Image (cartoon, rainbow, N blue to C red):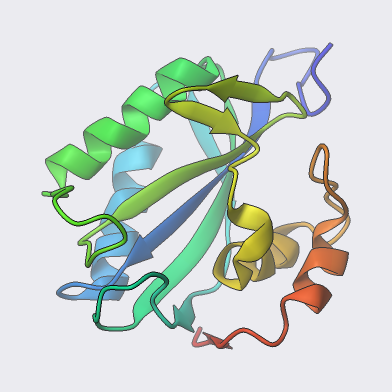
Length: 169
């Protein structure tokens, strides 16, 4: 049985990170959350505060606003990934520069306690343990959360405290 799966509803606890560094960043994140709320089989349980963060990667670009949401889903990991990619497309995400500026960036972080390693779907997200802009809002939602194959998010947040992540609301 998947840890984080509700035995009555069959829904699985999942976490998705959101980020934007183009246009009205906060409004972009709010719109993505609203589009996720409309998805059948996805029930948002909580949304973290917003965090201002420095961009990652070699491309010169504006700072980001990031947050993380917790949801209970009846979708499979693959179905959830497709929902996320579809929302990015609907919002106008263009994937032309790796780690470049983006209107919206949605990443599937965790799906219960399962581990997936496929060419286009890796859970837990492979770089989340290196990114304070993911771990700190995740720890805000559940400081006792254990990331399969890693460690507790509160421990990871403390280890990443040196990164430039500023809570803005």
